[in-house]
Image 1 (tube, rainbow over the protein chains, first blue to last red):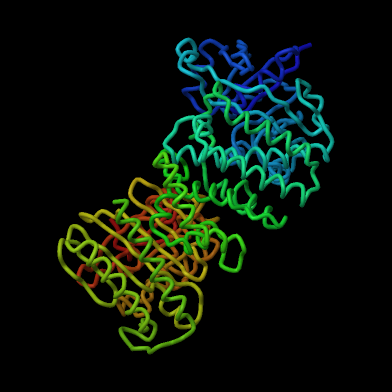
Image 2 (cartoon, rainbow over the protein chains, first blue to last red):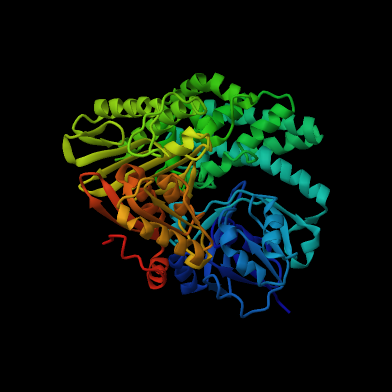
Length: 366
Length: 263
């Protein structure tokens, strides 16, 4: 009998990557999508193309699904499992929906704390963390979109999830807590941190796709050095294996440069204030470096690039208003919540002018 | 408009620093209208700093301020400022006061910035942009007014001696019918807390326009219904009620609010 898997969010990961996990299995997919326009497009044909990049080009998979519900209308079916890929802020909007499901639910939300947070809020115990170690664009190159405007492009990658959720099945490595933590630390700091820095630097250079920025040597060098900083920190603080770190870093540099992926900078750079949270991938990463005795010089350059992210279409577009209104001291204190007695504050202030010059050079193509 | 918002944020934070640096150090108290309506020297210094900057940046705009009065240029383009809303709190070392800067054009509230330098809460809003607390966008989520904490602001000195009891009657009835009614000493902060859904209802009787002009913008942009009316254009006095539409209807059904002159 077919398994029935419910997928919250028909965006990049939900629509582009999740179907590949269940491609070889007898599984029926159901989507929940709040975007009415996207939902109607999906329901028109009940299939779309998702492309996976390979060394020689793309593999195409015609993903067929059973239904696509608006939130709240998904409960008429008994599911064997669910996956969420809606975004770490948006997941709180569907907490009551998740509470109604009694199957295991894996969160592909790039925040390892969310399953616990949501469990406490809903008093549910079927929420588990998962890591799709993959970059998936929420769009595709024009030549694919011309045939099917729902096309998306993803990389091939590995996916890890809490072993307790293994009944969901699919091409997922169900691992113990220790292995999941190792993979998460690498994903969080060797992938997420440099990935968003690459996006912010690419935005400074007024580029559209992530790989375009990686072709500039000054941007590439900052990304590579930020990975080195993070790698040292992970070895010093969490005793992660150096060979694993080196392998992971090399893999990530290659992924960020993948010319087939067409990953939009606006997707990776979105919501800079979330990424600048005290424990998140920029400020949190820099603090981890300092804890490890590593000076996060290049990560601070990335932080400054995030401060200057002035995309008016972004949910956090007020960052520009605040940067333009406040002195560096006030911006750091009132908005970022780091203060003069902290080492990171000192470093950001000391490097402020140097980083402005670095960003100006990138902006002007020097 | 974005330039004016940036100016307002910058000046509110600078002015707030002046207040914070002198918090706990009383300069001089002058009796003005009532024992509660005292003014400190730092209030005036702070206000002058804001006014001088605005005059330099926007020489054709009018400026209405609490201490230094009205600088009339173009009455359709006006800054309304209170360099220290919550003076009594400030003078008594109660950390609930703020700088309030608003910009209204053709009587339409367009920009509001309120900054409490002790809590470091920076509220700001602009027409069409939304309301924010520091980096975070805020929106008002209404609940039944009976389940809400409320706040009322009315003058330390009776607006009308013969009607003084009416103010306290409304205050008492709102207190009893909701989860309590606060009188915080800062109408501007009341409106901010309402915008951020900490409060569910705010009422003001004969409030000074400079106390609430910025808060009105922040509340409106957060999705609050603000019913306000200037009841004395010589003394810039305003009556208002701010809440969800439903709460206002329910409140009017439960309490006689005729003493408030609303639209």
